[in-house]
Length: 170
Image 1 (cartoon, rainbow, N blue to C red):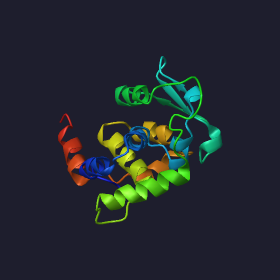
Image 2 (cartoon, rainbow, N blue to C red):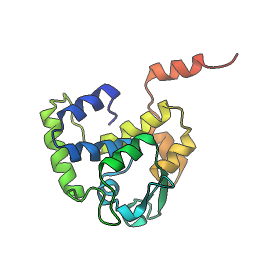
Image 3 (tube, rainbow, N blue to C red):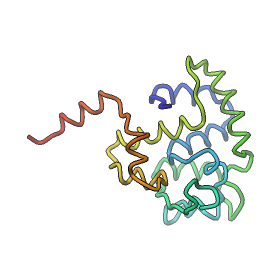
Image 4 (cartoon, helix red, strand yellow):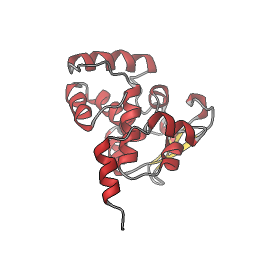
């Protein structure tokens, strides 16, 4: 279920715990699944090379994937105070993320049910609306096939499709 940018801001405003808000932003900036994000270890983060490895142990496809660390994600990771090893978000497990997310979503008084996986959808639509091509988005998300990305996540808002058409050079 897709969250609009306004809904994302509303959700972030409803989260009182600073570290949990950072974790939610991590999901939004990476498109990681719940277990992937809660399991990231500092040994998998290279701030110098700006790469982040999502270990195969936690991925659905059982393959490692390497994500690039952009400016916003870099700043977020620095705020989290890098260490040599240990969890990037050590307070959180996949289960506790769900419990806390449900509570914060309830506090945010959303008029529909949203889940942690909604963040992955929001990230994906954000990537596509930012102009990242479908193939690259598929790789970021760790999909085995671009068809999965096209089928599940190709619901870009109509306004953006119109804007894209207006950019045609002819």
